[in-house]
Image 1 (tube, rainbow, N blue to C red):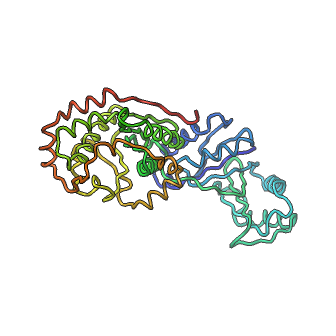
Image 2 (cartoon, rainbow, N blue to C red):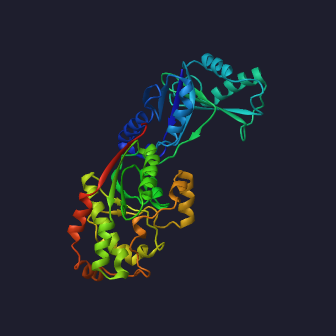
Image 3 (tube, rainbow, N blue to C red):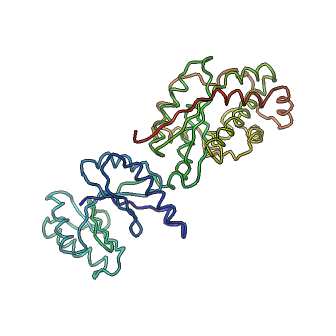
Length: 387
């Protein structure tokens, strides 16, 4: 019988809370496995077992498991009875002549009551394989490793360990709202908080019909891609051009960018509350643009009544770009577009504002009315993976 053996790392350190994390990971695996004829996802001592009814579904299952946060590594394995003879026969049957230049056997016993130690099992299986196929043994740098796991009810063996993404299961840390622009940074920020166990709700500010719909189309494609990591997503599309227009008419030009950002935080905060999200997340990196100086970040944060998380705050553009490329969002993010951040931008935005200065400027604006205007025209879209 075929199975996928899943190992976790960080979850194992959670002490008495570990069962809660394991249950969340199991539910996420079940969500990812829909449509692939997986009969069971079960917690075993120190690992999980995914029963796969049809071997042909393994390539697609592999691509899905690679994105499930909380998994350290996983392996496509075969199961046998807890009998050394049956284990030897199954391993010999799975190998072929000339398969490798050298090999070793690595056994882990979750069940210490087995009559042989791990080292004795390694020796027994290794001698059997060498006698049949003549492979040389290399304990330091083998071409092939035969992994064996002995559990109370059965044994598993496999020859390949595939890396998982690590982190914590999505949803275990609560829900957050990510301000996603369609650029390079914010998708990476969303991915990083997902890895820390957050379920993400997306908020996108756009300037349609003043500008083309390109930024919305990009964001929809990016959210579809990121949904592969959390299985369900909600996207709020917020029209922002009218809000910007009122700021242009009623506030000094150098302060516009900070005023825009403060209004975005207020609007996103209301959407976060609607979605039961506990924090806002941005792709801001310290000093990258005028609105991301330390002074301006502090002024922008003052507008929000819930925490603002900035997972990229200490990263430079090259580091963020490299992560976007690895994530698979970079090519979409660099498609040329005109988003709301480029509309009504002054030539020389202020880089060191103060709360008092900004509040004096906001006194000339109907802040609550502008927030209400944007919320009334906000549209919502849902996404699901697998579709």
